Image 1 (tube, one colour):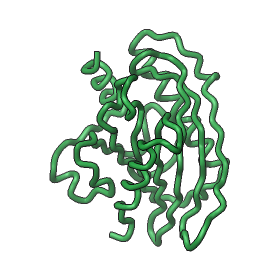
Image 2: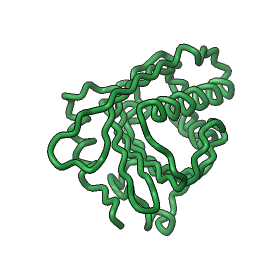
Image 3: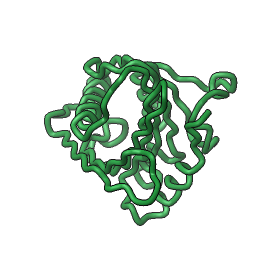
Image 4: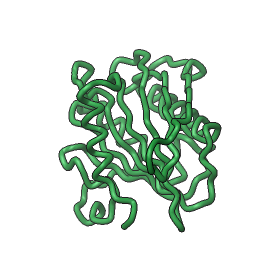
Length: 198
């Protein structure tokens, strides 16, 4: 079952890259024991997302184990080349198209009956504290885990928008675990290690 879910994820995210050469210039260098993936926009399962650039992801060990504290826990970075103003509305648009498209395609492949209209996205801006140079948002994604049980799951997310001269980066931490959990402490520690000034 685990092999099947991993295979489905690979087939619908399309571009899977394990090679050390390809990862040399990545932003998500750690944790090395988390599965790495690199995607190019446009995404086949979400054609209404009109970005140019790339997405990097790292999936925690236990990503598809419903009993694991790392269940559906991962981190991703969008590296966007075109000029996009990432407001709460734009983030909502991105998450809605992304998760609805992904759920629809994987559910179809697995012959699951999923009503994607019941996928609910909420986004709220976080008031910056201290000297943060990024815009920060909390989000919740209520979606269906089409990779394992097909049951409804709530993902908690923190997103940071980092603008540079030539690119805009969107860094997201994702987990269904509550924010006070050890899983989130681990995610926060990983975030500290990411360097956008390369």
